Length: 232
Ligand SMILES: C[S@@+](CC[C@H](N)C(=O)[O-])C[C@H]1O[C@@H](n2cnc3c(N)ncnc32)[C@H](O)[C@@H]1O
Image 1 (cartoon, protein in one colour):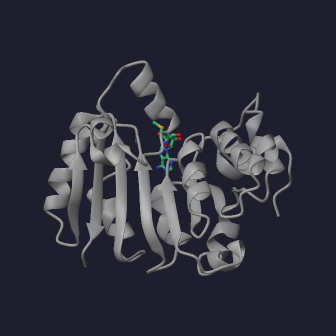
Image 2 (spheres, protein in one colour):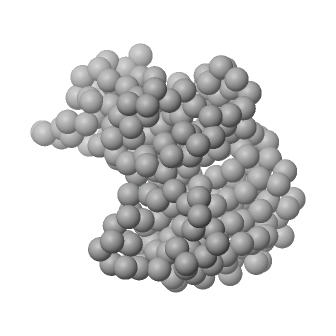
C-alpha cells in the first residue's frame, strides 16, 4: 500500500531523490476513482477491467492522453464503451481526471503508465481500438518514438480481430514513416490516411486534442490522420 505523501509517491516512480516535489503528484491521489498510479494494482486488473467498470462493454485505449480532452470527449459520446488512457505527466493526469469528475463520467480511467508496458496490464484479445494523438516526434532520436513496429507487435495479441489503431500527428515525416513500416507488416493494413484531416470528410466528428488546438490556432499546421486495421 502506498503512503500518500510526496516523498513516498516520488520514490514509487523515480529512483533518484528530489528536494522540491511536483505538487500534482499528491493532487493525483485526490482522484482515486479516475487515476490509478500503482503498477501492481493495474497489473492485478489485467484480466478484469470489466469488473472495474461494472460491465463488459468494448474497451478502448489512448496512449499519451495529455490533458484528457480527447478521451473525455469520446467517453461522453460513447457511454456504451470503456476508455483507459495512459499518461505520464502528473499535472496532465490531474487535469484529465478533473474533466471526468466534472461530468461524473463512469466509463473512463487514467493510468500513469508507459505505453510500452501495455502487455502487463491489458489482456489478450481485449482491445477494440487504440488512439495515439500527437506523439513526440523525437526528430533527433527516432528510437525513442512511441509508434514503432515494436509497439504494433506488442499490440497485436491484445487487439481484437478487426481492432483498429487511430493516429493523428502534426509531423509529416512521422506520418510517412508509420505508413511505410505498416506496409511491411503482414498483420496490419492502413485503411484510411489523409495528410489534411481538417479538410477531409473525417473532420466531421473529429474530437480535437489540446495539442491539436495549439497546432491549428497558433501554427496553422496541417494534421495527418491514419487508421490502421489489424488483419491477422
Ligand atoms: C505531445 S503530447 C500530446 C498529448 C495529447 N495526446 C494531445 O494531443 O494533446 C504527448 C504526450 O504523451 C505522453 N507520453 C510520452 N511518451 C509516452 C509513453 N511512452 N507512454 C505514455 N504516454 C507517453 C507525454 O507525457 C505527453 O503528455
